[in-house]
Length: 266
Image (cartoon, rainbow, N blue to C red; front, side, top):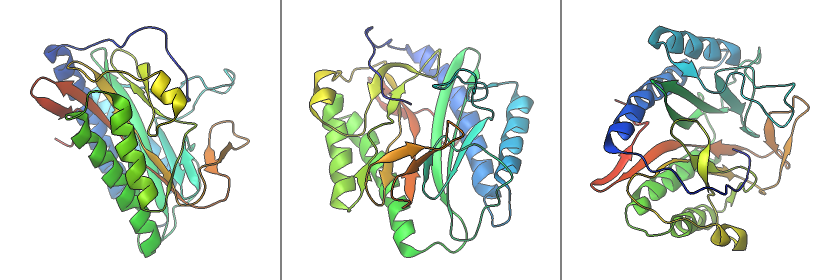
């Protein structure tokens, strides 16, 4: 999600509504499992996207990325999945490019079922991946795990974000700041904005963690510098220095009984 600030308070969800989101989340998890299985050397990214589209069609769900308006309304996103390779951070457009041995494939997808949304992402090592790339993926997954754990312990989001950022930077990586997580529910992008880092601006727009809040938390870690740029297709975001990046995400619901991972595999 592009960075933005909302003026309305977050919409809290009931237990019933979170349960409905969980049904969407199970389908997103199945789609990601399918993508992980297909992520082999020689497979084209467009074929992975078509498989997800067929899966969504089977369940009768709405793919939330396809047709999504970007900064240029004349060029909406054309696919059901964002498939980003190596130095591509997010919003990669599926095409005829073949995945190669040693690649990192970032898969991000979302759907809506019965009026409720779910959104998640994974970073997949393809074939024989170099140790430094595997470590980057593992750190990204650790950062997301920290967010899940801290979400149930902290009072303010900035406290969770600080723990995420600290772990990433201690491992020698940088957090992408141009793109952040988001609230989610009846639409994919709801209030609040959910940054994976802390600065003065983030603290100014901090929000309280309370039951009923549902967040799509999606850290993006770069092996090199945090700087990014967008390619000529007006969607694909890459690292400025050409070094690899990882992206992972879960939709998470805060309840009185703990954290529900809405997009957990069934």
